[in-house]
Length: 356
Ligand code: FA5
Image (cartoon, protein in one colour):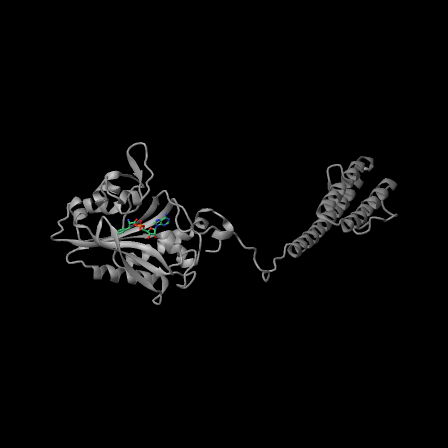
């Protein structure tokens, strides 16, 4: 008998011949079962049924007890050869199924790189913050430094040191929020002049932005709004320097063609004083609700720093002179984007804010 032909009726006992035939049948059945297995789980089940501890080959192995001693080596050799063949068939089918599974997944999970991507919603800076950064950058480029000062201020810094005395009518001009500790929510950023000029020696060129508070509310006025203070102190500074710096600023922000005008005004802390207006962007100067039919919108107050203020900060007005200005960042933002109601800037409506 040869290894290849187990069904040799001339050789061995009937028990041996029957066992060798069953070993061959097991191989044929395993080949079919592996071929029928449609996925890896089914193949594993088939593998256990043939090669597992209680599988078909293990059962055939138990039948060796029925053989004569000299028949066992032949049966063992035959069983091992068929088992090796079944192991090979299992591995071959496993590889086929794994490859098919990879191909199926590649197809199912294929990414169409030509599809438009899903937009990821991102946060953005509030329009006033955008304006603040832009305005600060313009002044930095002209050599100004940025400083900060507190929002809750002493009356000395917010009023007295700025020459706004307690009986001065200017105190009524700015309706003030008082705290219960004799301090005020600053009504303007001009107190920054006092804080910085008492600390630093001239020459100085400073800008300072922040929140300010007033009892004031209509389409162009809000009880909390943003101002920027700017001032420059040096020798022989004149109104001409002030005009040059502010016009350069307005042109850097809105373009060279924008209409501006300086109007005489009054502030207790500057002498002479002026206000800078811009042509109304809503009606192009013809008069509307936003500009109160004047065709102009007030952007900032300015003037030459009053000698009393310099002296209050320990600066000799005989040696030094300077100019100062205070602008509304909300106003600048409204003019820049054509916003006709200041409240829109504070309502936190994303439909509005996401346009900027
Ligand atoms: C002042 O506050 C002065 N401290 C400005 C100044 C500084 C003058 C330095 C001279 C030298 P005024 O009250 O005009 O000035 O306010 C300045 C700007 O703030 C105004 O031009 C306007 O743009 C803006 N503003 C004033 N009140 C409000 C408000 N309630 N809501 C929004 N913006 C306002």
